[in-house]
Amino acid sequence: MSTSVVLPALGESVTEGTVTRWLKKVGDSIQADEGLLEISTDKVDTEIPSPVSGVIEAILVQEDETVEVGAVLARIGDGGGEPSAPVPAEEASPAPAIPTAPATPAPAATPAPAATPAPAATPAPATPAPATPDVTTAPRAARGAGDDAKDVVLPELGESVTEGTVTRWLKQVGDDVAVDEPLLEISTDKVDTEIPSPVAGTLLEITVSEDETVAIGTILARIGSGAPAAAAPAPVQAAPSVAPAPAPVETAAPSAPAPAPVETPAPSAPAPAEAPLSAPAVREPAPPASAPAAPAPSVSTPSADADTVTYVTPLVRRLAQQQGVDLASVTGTGVGGRVRKEDVLAAAAAATAATTAPAAVAQVVQAPSAPASAEVSPLRGTTQPMSRLRKVLAERAVASMQQTAQLTTVVKVDVTKVASFRTSVQADFVAKTGGKLSFLPFFVLAAAEALRTYPVVNATVDGTDIVYPATENLSIAVDTERGLLTPVLRDAGAKSLAEISQEIADLAARTRENKLKPDELAGGTFTVTNTGSRGALFDTPVVFLPQSAILGTGAVVKEPGVVSVDGVDAIAIRSYVYLALSYDHRIVDGADAARFLSAVKARLEMADFHPQLGI
Image (cartoon, rainbow, N blue to C red; front, top):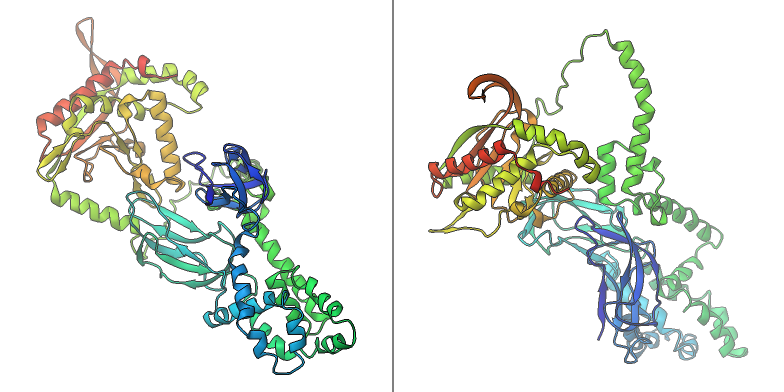
C-alpha cells in the first residue's frame, strides 16, 4: 500500500511552495518524521518530513518546481518488496502494455514484406517499446490531443462555495502555459480569484465559456504536454514505410553475426525512452543537416519565455500590476531565479526613488501654475456588464430589504478621552507592533463587549427560531476595486486592541490583494462598516442576511461641545463620532438597539482601555 506525500499548509497566507532539494531518492528507505525534502515559500524555507515509514516509490515534483498547497509530492510504499517495481513511477502503467503489444501480432502483421520477420524475431525484447507508442498514438492523433493531456477542474474555493463563474480566460486554445501561470479568472459569491495551470504545456481545449457558471469539480479546460507529441506520432506510423533506410542493416544482418547489428540500434532505442525513440525515426528520413538545426532554435526560444513566466506566481504578477512594475525588467532572487514579492517591491521603490527628484523639481517649477483639473473616469459615457460579485451584492441587498424590517438608530459619542489615550500610546504601539493604532479597533472592541451583554443584536433568525451564537464574529466591511467584501474577525470580544488592530489590517490587505481564503468571508454574526474612513459623518447601512444588525462608524471630527468644569458648564473643543446601528426589527426592538448603543457609548467615553491594549 502506498501513501501520498502532499505539500501541507504552511501558513494561512501561503498558497504554494517551491521544491528546493530532495533529501531522499527513489528506492531509499525512510522513517516517519525523517526529512524528505526542502520547500521554499515567500515567507519561510522549511523541511517536509515523511508522514510514514517505508520506501520511496516515486518522486512526482522535481527540484525548482513550484506547486500549490495540497499537491502530491511523492509516494511512499510499505517496504514489502515494492520499491523496485514502482521506481519507474508513472512509466509503470505503460509497462504492462508492453507485453500486450507483442502479444498482439502487430509485428507479425508487418512481416508481409518477408524481410521484416528476421529482425522481428531477434529484437523481440527491445521492439515492444516502439510498438507501444505506435498503438497509443493512434487514438492520440484521432483526438487531436496527447495521452498525457491533463484536465483543469474548478478547485475547491471554500467550504461554503459550490460554484463559480468564469469571468475571463487569460489564455486561448493553442497558447503555451507554464506551471502556476494564471489560466483564467473565476468569480464566486465571496471572492474573485485566478485559477493557475496545474501543469506546463499547450492549452488544447476550453470547455467552459466566459460568463458561464459551473459547479466545483467541473472540467474547465485540457492541457497537453506542450511538446510536438501530436505531430511526431503521425510520421511514426509512416516509419515502417520508410523502413527501407534501415533495410540495408537488416540485409547485412543475415550475412554478418545477426545479434551484433540488432543490438547496436537496441541500446539507442531504450535510452531515450518512447518519445525520443519516435523522434530519431522522423529525423532520419528528413534531411539530416536541417532537421537537427531546426529544433535547436525552437527549443531555445521557448526556454527563454518559460524562464520569464515559470517563476512568476499569480500573486506576484498581480502585485506587479498594482505597483506598475514590468516583470521583464525584474531579476528574481528566489529559488531558480523566481521573482518574489520582495523583488517587485524593491523594483517599485527604486522606480519611485528615481522619479522623486525630477518630480520635486517639476513641482517647484510648476508651483505657480493653476491646480490640475479633476481626472475624468474612462467609464464616463460607457456601458459595462455587472461583475459576478456586483450581481451577488445587488441580489443580497434587495433580498435583505424585502425579507427584513430594517431601521437605523444613531448616537453621538464623545471620544476625546479615546483620542488622548490613542495619542499617548501611539509611539509605543508602533514600536512594538509595527502598525498604527486607529479608532476602529476601539469601536470594534466596544461593540463586541456590548454584544455579549445584548446578544439579541448578535442573533440570527432561523424560521421561527432565534439563534444566539456563542461567539462574537465581526464581519469587517472592506472597500475593494471589485466591490464590498466582509472578512470575519473571529471571537473579537476575547482579543486585545493590538490583536484586533493587526488582524483587521491583515484581513483588509489580503482582501484588497485578492489573497483571502473563502472561509475567511464566512461565519460573521455582526458587521462593522467604517464609513468614516471616507469622511462620512454617518449613514444608514443595510443589514445583510442572515445577520440582524450592522454598526456604521462615522468620521471622528472636532467640534465645540458643552463640558462640566467644577460643576459649571463650559465650551470646549471635543472629538465626536456618530455611531449608526441598522437592525432587523423582527427580533431587535428599538429599546434593544438603544441599550446596545448606550453600552458602546459609555465604554468609549470612559476610555479605560489600558488592560486591553495588549502590548
